[in-house]
Length: 236
Image 1 (cartoon, rainbow, N blue to C red):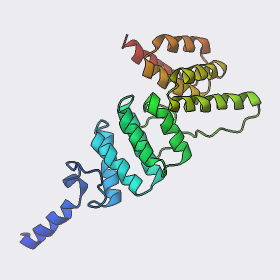
Image 2 (cartoon, one colour; image 1 turned 90 degrees about the vertical axis):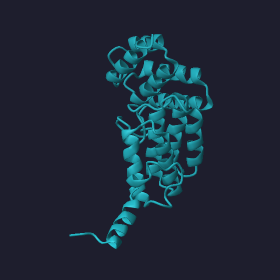
Image 3 (cartoon, rainbow, N blue to C red; image 1 turned 180 degrees about the horizontal axis):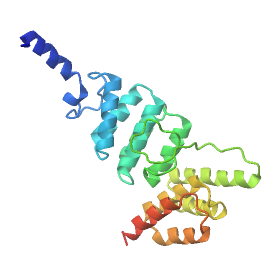
Image 4 (cartoon, rainbow, N blue to C red; image 1 turned 180 degrees about the vertical axis):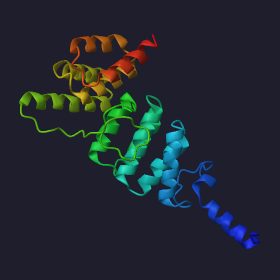
């Protein structure tokens, strides 16, 4: 059956509404006025998953969900930007976090503040992020679990203080605090992952190995330490 000119025109008009027919070439940051919000968001998420270095897609996706005031989607998009950039693009990551401050929750803000200095890591421990497409980590919460002893609570306080130090740019203070926590409680995954992120950032293979030697076989995620050690060794 031959399609009429009107039918072809309607088909093309409908196709133009699909993000795949133009959003990949769009450079404007505000995309929701032309494409349906959920469709555009899904398309951008697939683009980021396929091309983690596509900064235009990252920022379009973040802006889309910030305009919608969607905390979970915005945090997933911001987390993916951090993972995609790693230690690079501090100014861009800081601007995106500033724009999101009144929209995302405090646990999300807390995690992203720490990630400003340490950079993103797909395997790092983070708050639940069901909308992230790049993370490879088990998700968790940054809130303290009720402890039975004052010692455990003090260790949590040390991790929280270390993250505040990271946000303030006090990298050495944060590293020292986290090394004390890992030395006392090597099984704590949150402290270990934060410390590994610092070692990756500073490329300090010697300190990583020294900390690992002190902890012995009690580390929470030995494979993450293996990976970090191998990556740093390859740089030396």
